[in-house]
Image (cartoon, rainbow, N blue to C red; front, side):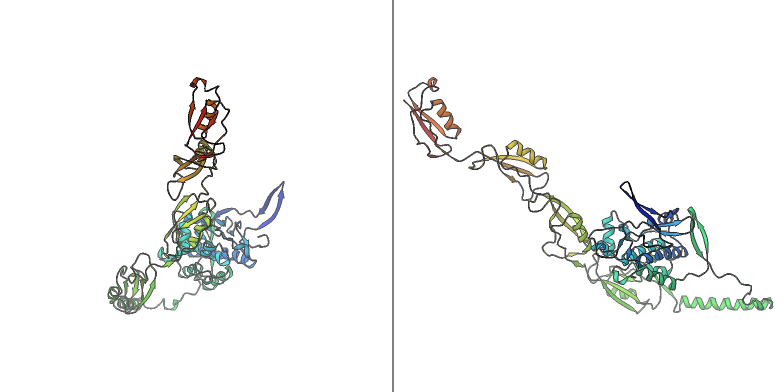
Amino acid sequence: MAKVSHANLVNIFDQGDHEGNAFIVLELVQGITLRQALSDLGRLEADQIHQVSRAILSALAQAHSNGVVHRDLKPENVILADDGRIKVTDFGLARELGTETETGSLVGTVAYLAPEVIRRGKTETASDIYSFGIMLFEMLTGSQPYKGDDAMQIAFMHTSQRVPSAKTLYSGVSAKLDELMLWCTQPESSKRPQNAQQVLTWLDTASELPEIAKTIKLPDQINFTEVIGELPTEDKPFSKHNKKNPLVRWLLASLITFGLGSGIGWWFGAGPGALVAVPNLSDSTQSEARASLAEITDSIKISKVFSSSFAEGTVIGSEPSAGMLVAKGSEITLLISKGKELVSVPNIIGKDLATATAQLIGARLSLGKVSQWFNSEYPIGIVYAYSGSDGTELPVSSSVDVKVSLGAIPVVAGLQEDIATAALEAAGLSVRATELQFSSTVTKGQVIAVVPDEPEVGKGSSVKLVISKGAETVKMPAVRGETILAAKSLLESLGLKVVIDTKWLSKDYGIKKVTGASESVGTTLRVGETVIIRSR
């Protein structure tokens, strides 16, 4: 921004580094922000709006001509100085036009973001114009066009709705300024003014405001320009008739008054200027709507629009809308429902939740229920499934449920049962039961596998541990020459049953030797089989 200098920009004087801390020296401007002015005054008058708008557009035009977009234009970033100057500030998000202006992420304040910024993260000079248009709506009406419980809801409104006329909130707004606001907030950037100079030129040539101005004081030392009428002159129109006979003057005035009264009464009562209110036609059929309008006009047009609230073929409303006063014979457009508009759900598998949400909003859908499940194929925090992934089209504004990966279930195979249980519980799982199985590869007492109770496992789910009983078959060890007691203990540790064939008393098992066995050394035996050892 240092290369952009303008009377309506907070200028940059210097930059440098002090002990490793980067700094920028900016122009000091004392005053309040446009946001504070709107909070104090509500809506602004047309002459005030004209002065503020011209200052903002002049500053933006200078930036745009130097290839710089602001990207965060809002009332908080417009300063109304105590000395009457108006300054645009806070180019903290400003970028030179180029590839870096398409970041794929949402920047700026959501209440003023253009639809293309929300959908694609793409910022251009026309995006600044949209932000100015939202500010213009706020200056005309005292409120923003979209309100919601959270930023995501407001962002969705910017991409799915059209900014309404300011006259819907305040009928007394300037028609020209309202026209300009609607032009600047066109949803498609190509239909908006492409830079601030284009808007500034329009404002200067199409303004309804008189040329002579004076400075007025508003609360908190805000200075605006109040536009006044032409200054009085010494010549008074029709002054030569002032000395005529008073009776003649009275008669003339009476005749004019009577004539005007009669003419106006006929024009607006029974004549072409008669005004009637447009009836409420919502939720009626076309034939019913035409019948309701029969006494007002024969000039009826049909416009078909999508609607999520009205069945196909039903009248949604009219233009002008219900309650508006129109002259008899005026053209009225019936808005007929085409039913719900269907859109395809974008492929969001493999995306993080923030990126997936932005893509859904860009497709005029919204984020629905988010559930988290263990999934070994996708990293933690990545979407791996969503409703509508089968190609089914959904109505605009529908919510899309997504499943987000918690990563793989902790690997506990080969761990002792108590250690494995602690690891699973730390991950949010509950060990419901254990099951013993033979295993030729896993040591007895260690975990063979984790078996979920449900197809999908999330935090709080229960699982079963499969624990190794050791190998199912064993090799017959050499026991000849061992004491009876030692041989018996060895065979039983292998899971074999032992029968002792001996003449000795049991008290001698610790000293008497085994002389033979029923199975040869190295023979493969199933766990649980019986082996006879002899001592004679």
